[in-house]
Length: 167
Image (tube, rainbow, N blue to C red; front, side, top):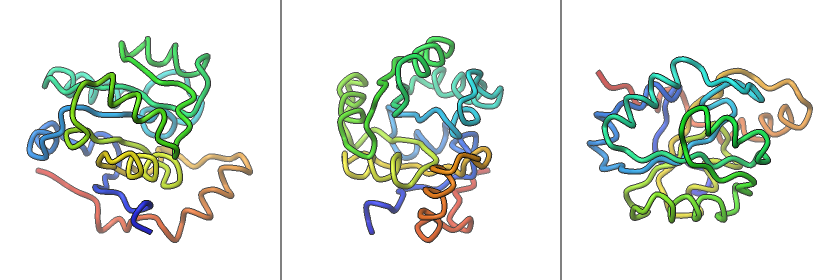
């Protein structure tokens, strides 16, 4: 069960402040795309995500995308944000996350992975030995495979009472 438990819980990515990241000594961040930075399969990041990325970059925190999606989905999105990426990340397997750690050039203890899915993002981060930040999905997915996955995740989801709120 510990592999399914996130280190930190946030309502969405904008709740993760630079102040929080600095306080927790996080110097590198591994990002998911779908329902973390934008809605599922949307090629355009949300404005709030762009603003958040700008603040984090300005603070000197390194960023990289790790997605289970194929390069035609990930590469243009990453290019738009001027971020390095690992496509076909195979989360929850540790391949993509370990590659991202290597590219970030930071110790695992100084890295956090952010994502909206327990069975891929959170489990993958925990298995790879980096801190995991769960964010609630930006919107519900409608496809049958995602509805099944979300139903199976439900008993493992952190309570909204666990959300970290900083002033």
